Length: 66
Image (cartoon, rainbow, N blue to C red; front, side, top):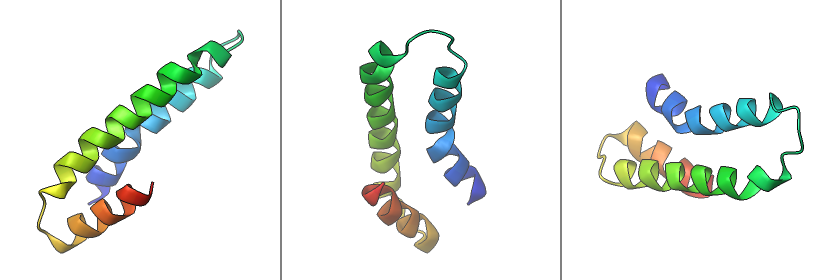
């Protein structure tokens, strides 16, 4: 279960660390970061929609609200 939660948050963690390491203005990266986050969440949500295990269904429910 932890692996799934880490996988869901991995994109957010990567992009957050990437933005904070920049030493320049990062406003122009907002659209790219936003698109990447929504794409990742869409893929994960699609994958979890097919799962039938109880905890995976609960994680899917939580992801829909994220």
